[in-house]
Image 1 (cartoon, rainbow over the protein chains, first blue to last red):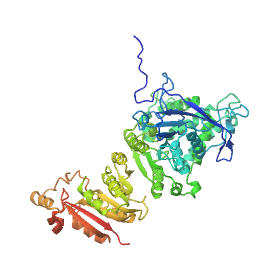
Image 2 (tube, helix red, strand yellow; image 1 turned 180 degrees about the horizontal axis):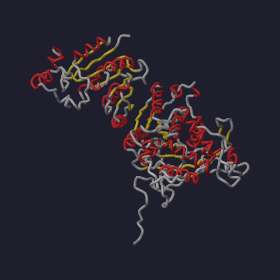
Image 3 (cartoon, rainbow over the protein chains, first blue to last red; image 1 turned 90 degrees about the horizontal axis):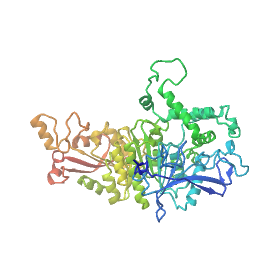
Length: 386
Length: 198
C-alpha cells in the first residue's frame, strides 16, 4: 500500500512555509546610545497582500519566540509554529484575509542579527558585545521592515506577553502607522517581582562556569546549566498553581520516596525536560537580552510615569485580553492598560478569559479567547477592506 | 428592536459620550452609535456578550458592575445607561450614585413590581408573581432588588437625584392613557432620565 499523499497538517494550517532574510544597510540608533550599522531580520509571511496594501498585520513574538509563528518548515516537522492555534485559514488571524508578517527580533537567536550571528567587521560572533536592545528599538527596526515591505501601515500589531508590549509600543511611537493593537496577557511594565524573577534567571546564566563572560562560543562551550535553570524558572511562572497540580500532581514516579535528588516528582522531570530541550534551540546571550528588554519596558516613563499621557497621541483601537489564572501578568495588569486607555478616551475592548493554565493560555486555543480575538480581527479585516 | 431602546434614543443628544452598564450583546449602543453618533463603551460580565459587542463594532469592557465604576473619572460621560439591570445589582443605590458621578445624566429602566398583574397574582394566589417580563422563580431569579416606581422615586429623592423624564410602558412599550394616569399600577417598565444637582 502506498503512503497517503495528503499533507500531514490540517486544512486550517498555513501548511508549508519558509523564512526569508531581509538586509538593512541604514544605521539603526538604539536606546542604549549605540547603533547598528547594518542588520538582518529573518521573517515569515502568510497570506496575500491585497492590492490596496491595507491588510498587513504584524505579529510580535514573546521572550522565547521567533519568526516561525505558524505552519511547518518541512513535512517531517513534529511541531508547527508557536502560534498555530491563532494563525491560519479561518483562525482569529485569518490568513485568508490578512497578510501576516512575523519576524525574529534583533538580539534574537533564530537568524536575525543577534549574539549568535557573526559581526560584519571582524567575522566573530557578536556574543556579549551585542548591544542591549529595548522594546522601542525593536519597534523602530520593525518600522524599517514595514518600509522594506512597502506597507503604508499595519491594520493591526498583535502579540502576547512581551509581544503585546511591542504592539502597545507601536501605538505610542508610530500612532499613525498602527490602526489596531491586540495585546494579550501583557502589562504596562514589569512588576518588581517580575524583575526579580528575571534577575534570578540572568544570574543562573551569568554565574555558569561555562558562560565565559558571554564568549562561550569562542571557548566552544555552552552555559547549558544556567540556561536550563533560567528556563525552568520561567516555566514555573507560565503555569498557575492549579494547572501544575492538575498536570503533575505530587505522585512519586516510583511510588515511594527514594531519598535522593533524582527527579522523583513528575513536575521535576517536566521542568528538567523543558530546561534541557531549551538549550538546543536557544542562546544564553539572547535570553539575557530578552529579559533586559522586558525589565526596561515602560512606555509611561517618557511621560512622567503617566500611562494615559503615553497613549494620548495614539489613533489605534485596542483589544486587551487577560487570563484569570495568569499570575505572571495578571488580569489586573491588563486592567491598568485599560484604565489608561479609558482615561485617554481611546477605543478599547477588554476581556478576561476564564481558563486554567495561566500565562501560557495565550498560546492555547481556549474557545472564549478565540471567539473574542476572532471577532475583533473580523472587525479589523472589515475596516481594512481585507 | 426593543421599543424601550427607541425611547432612550430620543433622550440621548447626538454626539454624546455614553457608558452602558450591563450592555448585553451591544444592541442599544450599536443603535445609538448609528442613530445618535455616540461614542462610548459597554460594560458586561459575560464574555460571550463582550464578543457579541465587538462583532457589532461596540467597544466592550469585561467587568462586574457590582465592583463599582472606580475605573472611570468623574463626569467622564454625558450619559450612563442601565437597562433592566438595576434589580440585579448588589447595591442599587450605590450604583445610581456612581452612575451620576461618572456621567452628567443617567438613564435607568427596570421592571415595575407594582404592576397590577403582579399585585393581582400575589393577592389571588399568595405566591411570588411570575410574568413574561419576570419569568424566573423566586429561588433562582437574578432579580435580588426588585422595586416599584414609587420605591425608585423615593430613593431618588433620598439620594438627591432629580428625575428629568419618566416614561412607563407595558411589555409592548405602548404608552397609553392609563399609564399616564396610574403609572405605578399600569406600567410594566419604568424608564427614567436622571441627573444630580452638583
